Image 1 (spheres, protein in one colour):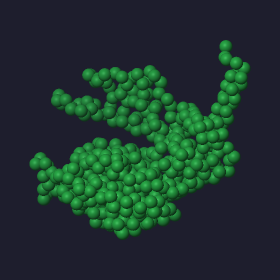
Image 2: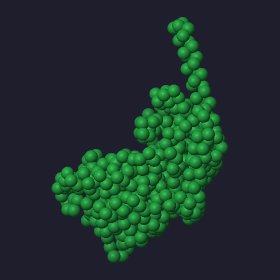
Image 3: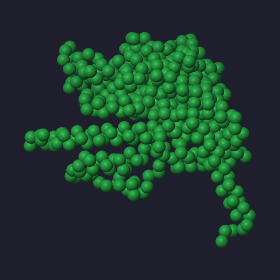
Image 4: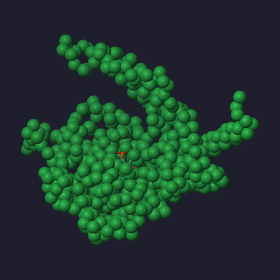
Length: 496
Ligand SMILES: *Cc1c(COP(=O)(O)O)cnc(C)c1O
């Protein structure tokens, strides 16, 4: 079957394309099924890096060649976050159904800015489900975003506009009489500062409140900061509670913050990018008691729900305030009573007009797996973190340097002093990565530096943790031996 003479982007030969697409799917399934057999990460050789320096391709290349090129230079050098031994920073491990969802969304091709389509129904249903998860009423609104940073930005825009008490959309932030203040613990994610900077409020609008020895916001310090700011003519607007900090997984006392916000007349926002879905796990749901009392919650489905990147979301209880913040229609984009452009326009709830169909991958995975399974996987990640913490505590050469309250383990190999610990542990981390054994990252908690494992990986087993700790101890030995021989060498005088 050939198209007519007119050019399109469709294949010239649908049957050949079908055969190639089948092969791509077959190889994708193999790639995923054998993920455990590959190194977690591999450094990219110079010649592969150089292959990305060629200029804009003027003419065509057969798709099969482009695909082979992708396999050799891209798929061979992934981040590794789908690997069972990836625990660095805070990712998600993706899932194949979600990948199929992204593929189907791209084939179907709808623009989720709005319109009466199956796709907009799917996104609205996903928002309803997320509202159910956090315990928000049906009257709340919400939107899917690229990720948590964007979700928090959307919430802060709504909060700023309400708190300012005048027409910020028309007048701009320069019209503010009393500078606004947002409060969060000193463990708050950096995206909040970025958001407030972007909103013209300045980094100083984010007041960081000291956290306690379990990295939770200190409520006495919060209360004092609000009182001091009021006394000096500033306007407290919002308290950001974190349900699962990125650094250590700490969960602020959300109920107490909700009480305080009610007393003080402040907006209560929850950054639930990590723990916003904890209510799916019945045995841990109590950790986020009070989340349902928030005015807004940010959730990151590409983290603990393992949606392929990108998928974030924000839920806002005051649907009218949400709409009033972003509603905007050019003359070329008018809503109608009937037809394609009828109904709720999803772009009226965020910054983007053209929006991708990111809801499908979440919708398909929830339907296929059931919400209860996501809850069980969350419970298992927390159990893995506790298992690792117990192994670390039982070993004389390893120590925890932060409490393990959720799914993040901050640990390190012991050393003579802080400097030596930093050198040794950083070196261990880099060798683990470079040898493709595991990807973990590092952090500092209350002045102490060390390694950090975030368990949000549905492929990890206990044996992977045993393997990691064995590798850590083995590499530490190796580094110590190298240093001992270097010292011996120096003692012998300068090298020849
Ligand atoms: C990851 C994270 C964010 C940022 O989300 P992105 O999806 O990376 O933009 C914000 N807050 C917390 C607590 C996070 O863990």
